[in-house]
Amino acid sequence: MAHTHPAGAPCCEFLAVHEDTVQRVRSLLPGEDDLYDLAELFKVFGDSTRIKILYVLFESELCVCDIAQLLGMTQSAVSHQLRILKSNKLVKFRREGKTVFYSLDDDHVRSILSLGMEHLDEADSI
Image (cartoon, rainbow, N blue to C red; front, side, top):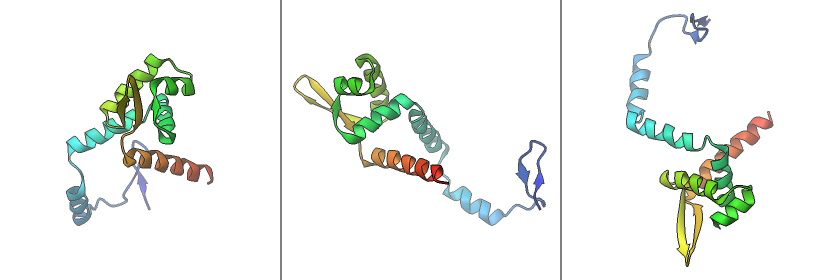
């Protein structure tokens, strides 16, 4: 039977650390710098405007004007968010004359978005 820690979190009934399991898991953990970088990456996904931009780019390569039109935003607001997405290697761009077209950086970004939506869909069906 689990007891409750004073802070309200459940804890083990007996104070017995499973040392072999703890050591095995500890050896598999990424380093602190990697975990920090991963947390920073997920912060970028924590903004619904950036998610909307990523989602329209999921469908097609677009210029800033197209994105602004689709999302009802100003071009400067879109450009600001694209800079953040680009600096986090989530979007890439290419020039065609004076026009700059943006797209998702790679299939990892596509997978992250797809898995997130799949998770939401499964949670909604429960």
